[in-house]
Image 1 (tube, one colour):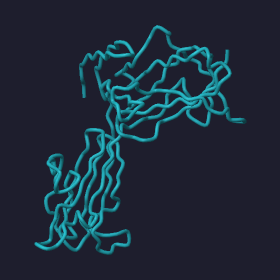
Image 2: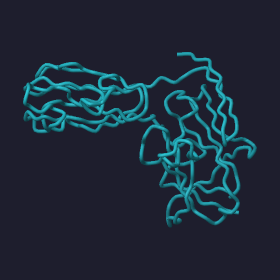
Image 3: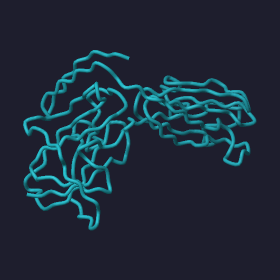
Image 4: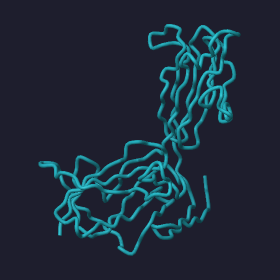
Length: 263
């Protein structure tokens, strides 16, 4: 698919212009959620699994293996004013009903079963039929010149290092997570923290540096590569540090790479 788009990202990082002329194809995968039966196949008011992590563009298929009708309805429960706004399977017949949803946005999407058998009985939601779909960017790992752990990257303190990665296509420029997750206006990743120097770990020198005058985030559509110029500090000479990269997709664990800085 061809896209032609020019984006300017303004903020503390400066202004970055991104020209997008193409996107990379992503082969989506499907995750199956069994409704109404536990791991042993015995009928139960459950989703198995109930907490699912997928990548943007993937699908989730809910399959009813239970002995009664169930649903997969978006929302935190029957009292949610947006209940069913994102997706709603309707009533899935016992033992045969299926429903598939493709997730094209990152974030966490709660769901529940809206069935109430009859007056005087608790809704299935009250019995624990609820779950979450966590949708993340598909991070392809750190690209050269950065080597993945356990390798320790060695670099000159004060140099500008290009952090390169792919998210399986152009995902916009507002992709970096906030350091303070409760304050979206706080500083964004990447960040680094001083760490212990691992003895005996393999090392590899950073072969490519960036122009210290460059800043911010850029995207190359031809190679499907994002680049962020990380400006290290001269005061880090002699230190080992862990680079942390987290995206604005709700993930709780950052992606990391190890560094040792020299004069």
